[in-house]
Length: 343
Image 1 (tube, rainbow, N blue to C red):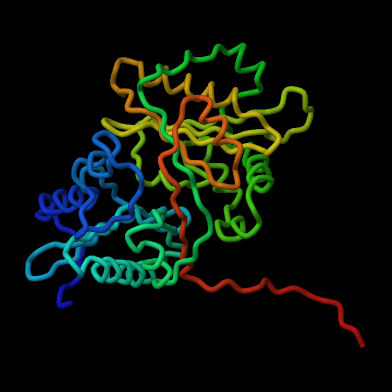
Image 2 (cartoon, rainbow, N blue to C red):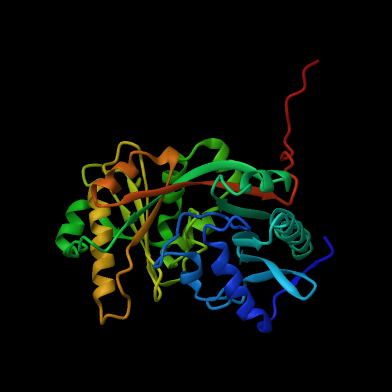
């Protein structure tokens, strides 16, 4: 292949919009991450309208150009607070060449990220279109799977809760002081290998009450939120300071679906906090009509069951299961420690 990878320019906008649209269709000559968000309302192309439409200062967009024709694009979101990069779109078209095009885009991203100090690279994708082989060949490790569930607009959202009902259920907004209880909640739910890979710090959990999405999910980098809220649930019958569940809500912009994420201890029934979250979204969506109801998306990792069952009882349906990959750009070393000497 004689093409080259370069940063996108504003003059590429029209071509990139068409490439993004074609890649989300069932086209044998096109490849994408294959996230199960196809359809007129929740397709990747419709989420952004054009790939640069919701571009942020921290985002990067690379294109593959061959003979003045753009046949591939890669969009990445950068988290400057953790030096982590997330691939949110990787598209290519062209019979026989799309796989090589995407591999060259990923390789260019890894080199560019190493120069800019990136520590970790994340991506979520389907198991089709050669995605697992592509990322494993590039050195990514598979570390989890998420079920993506969607609640459509056919059933109205429930009514918002009163303050008295929230208090009775032990639900309250998250605060920076919840950092340690949230970290303990995450550790109680998440397998140790995943904890070691994601490596959240207390400072990351402190940002939860200010709109940051911790822990991450496959959908959070893709959606763009107008409002972000987090709530904690404490067992009213438990005098300890521990938390039973974490709820994260995102009111999306324009044509995007809204976001609901629940993290809870295995013994916690999340029926109440899910109903509360849907009620909050209903109130936010109905305020002045500025945020239309385009449905609600909810990611659930496979080890977080039975949260997915409670979501299905609340009207969610299964879209698909996506795989999570991560590549570390640094080498882990053991911390120095003194050990007793035996003579």
